[in-house]
Length: 339
Ligand code: NAD
Ligand code: WQD
Image (cartoon, rainbow, N blue to C red; front, side):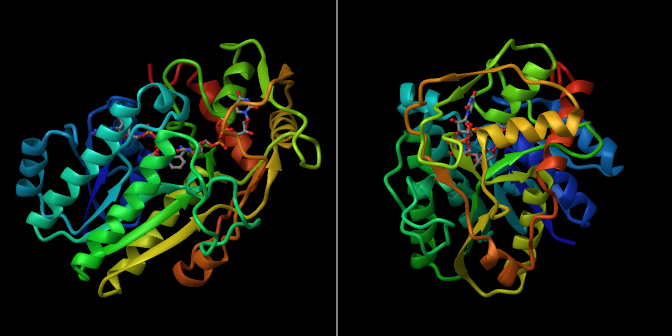
């Protein structure tokens, strides 16, 4: 079976993807500098699957360390999650974001090329559509104006990887545009573990529920949406992880190319819908108040996921209730995350 190098594999989406890869029979090698994650997540991945993976604590920016990994391991394909992802922080630290996300990817791809590894699955984001021109968003929807440096690294990296394939058509480049991943593994053993105050909606809600935070601020209730709050396409992280397994299977049967897929459920939920779903699924109340709009938020963002179903044979299985149940199971059994 093939060996997959998973960059950023200790992180939220990466750890869930490692579980699905190991269960599908792949050998897994993780490289992560643990700047936003913990070694414990990978220990739990091994506990859940009963299988071993190989872990390198290394930075993508450390070219020598990356070369050594490729020298040591016989890598067949790379799933590239490693990157900084906090939208607000990226506005304050653009150089750090461009350096880490762009230079890190350039070094990774150069090492891949030098070792004859030419298959990469890249974590892109719905953010590349900006305020989308078409709703539900298909992959043909033009890229929009991206409002922050984090999102711009995704747009630029999509272009860089596409250029790599243009220069050498043997490259297989899979650009997966994630919508809003939430939830956790059913076991409650791995999940999202943000450092500091969460930026994203679901971890904020679960931390209010567990008593770490007092009250959720709902950013804006005067948008042109059914209830005035923003609408998003939330997707269970295990469904998302499975999308990567399907992506690898598709790439294995191809000669070379660039493929783009939206990974979402196709269903839009407002912020108030999510609060209600979380309360109902878990039989508790979430304290919230309305606040000003947050800069850079778009009113509505949800996709048409039918291309991934047609071409990858992938479709999200879990609905919002399970996403909320699983997010809560993780948080309540790990109130301080992996600490
Ligand atoms: P995460 O922060 O939990 O995982 C990213 C991992 O990359 C972390 O473990 C971090 O330690 C590691 N990392 C960062 N820079 C590194 C470097 N230079 N060298 C080695 N390791 C490094 O984030 P996540 O939510 O799991 O996201 C994974 C990927 O998916 C990211 O690229 C993110 O931008 C993208 N994405 C995430 C979302 C989301 O909402 N979570 C949505 C769209 C796209
Ligand atoms: C969802 C909704 C907020 C927090 C971000 C990135 C995107 C992608 C996924 C990364 C919005 C509202 C939130 C809160 C709130 N990321 N909200 N109170 O902004 O859709 O997407 O994560 O890799 O690039 O931009 O997700 O979870 O931050 O927000 O009312 O405390 O919840 O305004 O409407 P978003 P989110």
